[in-house]
Image (tube, rainbow, N blue to C red; front, side):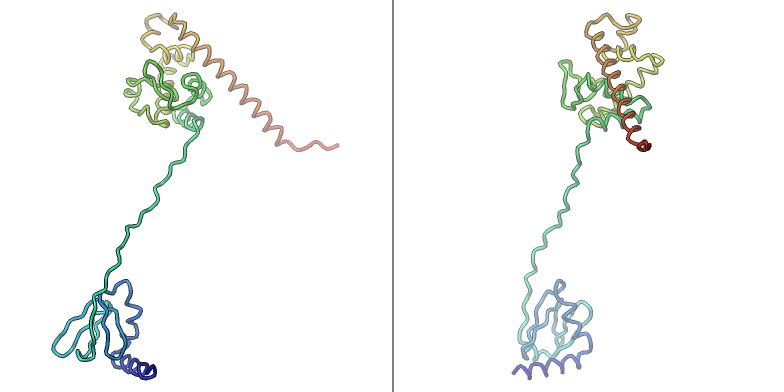
Length: 239
């Protein structure tokens, strides 16, 4: 029986051209119907239709013709459900506060250590810090200040950029005087203008001292780190 089916199959492939031989390759994901032949073979095709005494089979790459009396039955294939591909969402890795502040300082052309010193005193380098006056984030931007700077104080990168930009504006306004710039950052430019210098507010005066001490500490730390790096690069002395 197996030999008979094999002979019938070879006969059909010779009769119906190479398209029949390629049918197995063309079937699969494109098939919509299964055609069962009386000789025991079955074919998966896109569609089939009867035309007179012949049945036309659409394989997707061509058309085959069979005598209708050679076909036992035709069954519709149940198309498997196609699940939508779900690409993994890009995960944004958290950026260290120091990196945000350095990037913001560089973009504004001011000393990164100075910007970091302000952020250290203002918020402890925390984006979730909120003052009792409503100042928010790393460099504690007030809502109206953030609006003026066109930044979103709730976003750490925006907050750092806005704080650095505001410091730059103040340094330019006071011709590079860091004390007056810090006084205005803490108490507002209006208070500096009103008193013609650092306002007589204990909070503001303590603030300026704390920031400048932190700035000095960072400068010393940078010098020590630079000295260690230079020493490590020097070749060992030979006798």
